[in-house]
Length: 312
Image (tube, rainbow, N blue to C red; front, top):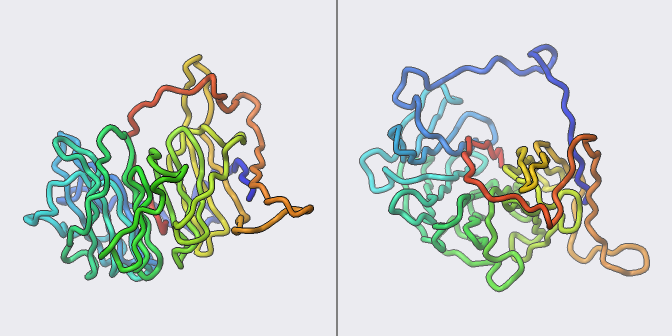
């Protein structure tokens, strides 16, 4: 598995096939909310978005759209799911089965996971993971295309094979436990997963989250201020992005998009029978360098914007 820094040329709306961006919530009840994440079905028609709590704007609800974002409905207003610090949301391929998670906010320690089996009309609290208090990021959620296989990263990574009815801590007692997870994504089957940690590494799983491998440890991709990650439907093409940060010595680094177009399968070997290592290619920017262990940056609170996970 090789990771490369991607360089994209600006497109000013010509030849891309992408139409103009339209503010669909201005002057509506959904305007000026502290949105934290958004997800889409496979067609882009059915959308779900979550708003957290920032102490300024009224948020704390889950909203859905059944017309590609033209109109939005507050699905949790007046229910016990309202007024929560929603952090992450994911959808199946048709927008019917949804999963959302609450982050630490105010007096709430966070870690609650809720699911919907009716396109967001009703929501059920499924489980409270370990408290996320003390962690500035997470939890983050992901789903396969059916909504049966769900994943939550909240200190540990938890998996469910029955749409959230029961959960298993897949990383307890492993090197992947108690990580400050930032984001995660799944392929369409929920077999191949990718997850990123704050100022650290990219991890992957090829067995629905049962085991995890650190793919960037010891490489130039390690120690980046990772912010978001996404996967294609097969788990082969992955993309991750990191924001610019300063080390304690004032050295600027990061602020790039990284891609990987190969997948490491369990048990694959290199010539000579040795385990095949995951290598990460890098086209280094001439003015930036990755931090070393002696220049670890101070953790700062991250202000997120919604990330489309079409996989939070």
